[in-house]
Length: 233
Image 1 (cartoon, rainbow, N blue to C red):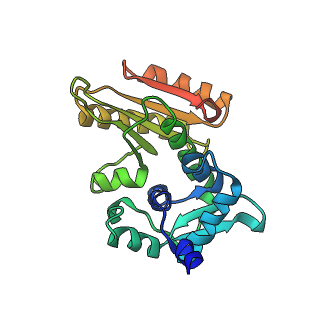
Image 2 (image 1 turned 90 degrees about the horizontal axis):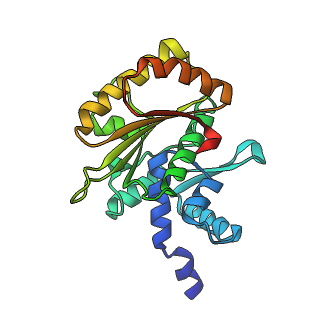
Image 3 (image 1 turned 30 degrees about the vertical axis):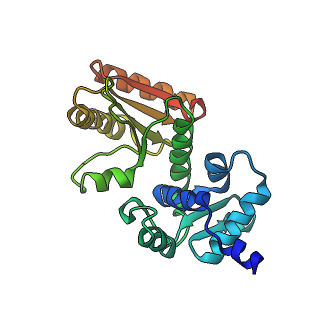
């Protein structure tokens, strides 16, 4: 009986993991370990995946049979969190499988960026992926960042916002990325008000980084914008 009770007991870290995966649509095993299980063995992570899939709250798959392991929140997991008031259903993105191949690398890099920001001091109070930003503004935005990092106002601190864009080289610099960035600046400037805001554009290679800097810097006024490679974060 004791073994059965322990097997089905919901641990606080389980709840946190389900909500986290539901926020970012999909996470790799190593991303989830780095976020919530940094100081435990791989065996502990495996046990977490085993009990989570047995409950039906997470879907887990090893890509191509022997590739990296990824997980996503199922509809049953979303309902469990919502019905138990563990997380608002509006903050969760349930799925039936991994992110489609065309969006896979982009999604992984967005979560990598979120994990890197979480490790900064002070860490953002909120890390909102694109779908949550769209929902927050009821679909009224024409552009939105891949990741919006927010620091909440304090007594003598107006707070701050950092919009992060992940570029993997598939979009035209001049006809897509420059106008999109300028429009994103307009949105941030209007929305954040007097609080400081900035944009961080992450791209795959140093050559692409330099091209983006050459195209964007002349188009900007004094809005804080940095262009770096993904490996620099």
